[in-house]
Image 1 (cartoon, rainbow, N blue to C red):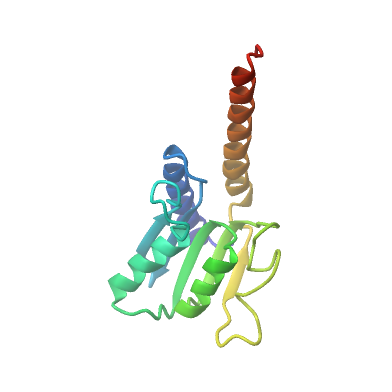
Image 2: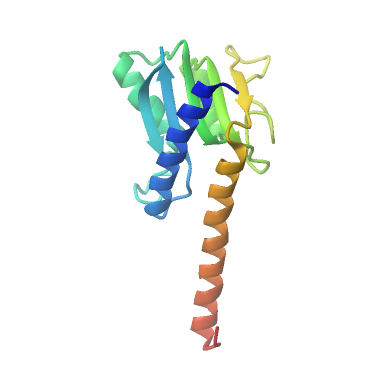
Length: 165
């Protein structure tokens, strides 16, 4: 793990915090080309009423617009959570060179946890993957969000049933 990897992952973590402040699952992504951020994204599926508005999708769309090309050769995507199958497929189609993620997603991760679309030999492009960059911070951000969400749902159920806290 390089200092640059940590630097860009810190920015992705900050974007994830913005998503959380908006009630979204806290995932952030940063797309880098030649040591410059060309795209940023955070989850916006709830607020945007769009199941495809994952952090990776927003960052890649911005990067493609900035470069004026749908092929994002020689770019690195930093994301706080291992990409899902939809996002991993997008990375392959975009020709992202390298993926760096913070914490694995054993339920839907498609960069090695559940399945691996990013390095699938039968696809026309494989991605270099580095995982575990600022893993504890990324994992805590996500687990803290879901702990708060579960506690709130439990409190709402108690209140609805007339039960005291």
